[in-house]
Length: 341
Image 1 (cartoon, one colour):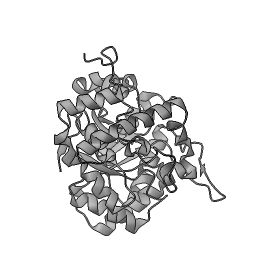
Image 2: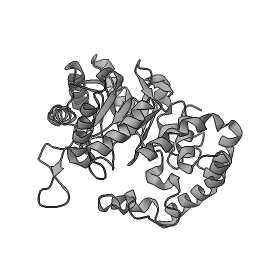
Image 3: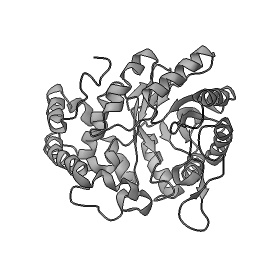
């Protein structure tokens, strides 16, 4: 396993990491979750990602029980959670229930949400804690103070953001420095072959100027880059689940068809490299030096093993192969978009 520094911090995270979104609580119980986590851990994965919003807290409960059952040394793990949506399952049916202060990045919800997440995970602290989305109703200054308090209490070691704009991250960083508080260390953005501009262009100044690390999610574009949606939506896939119908637009309409067309053209490249489309997509993300870790998901041990093989594909992605991929994708950020050029 390759280990990379989380931005300019001293923390090393595995190049491939394991996340619980979609699967824990919706498709997997404790034993199946532990089997997948153990397969990843034995291969050198040390970063396990979660959030209070995943299955309304059930995902954290399952991960916490799995880690306790495994008996791993806490020092060998990098565990994260994310705070923003703190709802609970609706006992009367589908959907979640939210109290007046169960959502957002107020000081109240950050402190209470962190305590609730730690209880579900059965941990004294998480290594990484993220602001899961920007909160337009809460001043960034209030959020920075609250996150600093969480770290000072020892309930988290590093804090960061997820899907914040570069301007919002910079504002939080500058305020923290001015007030002698702990600034954000990392961002968790979506990044894959079909979704590039934010990571490659918008955030470009932040990698050097503030040492931003990235823990990227959706490296397979919600499954599109596996090729499994090339001929429709298979039964049992993520897009067939009622709670993920909101993802359907990514493969419907003109834009969706354009994405699927590019995926089909990538198939011969993967075949030439003797790998799957998914492995090619994961390896491609790892060629970006500004990516600290690529979060993968899996619903079976076999899928974990297949994902881990992407590490063997990275050396095969020569400059010529990468340019061949660029010709197919035709979506490289322009010099005007990339602020470092």
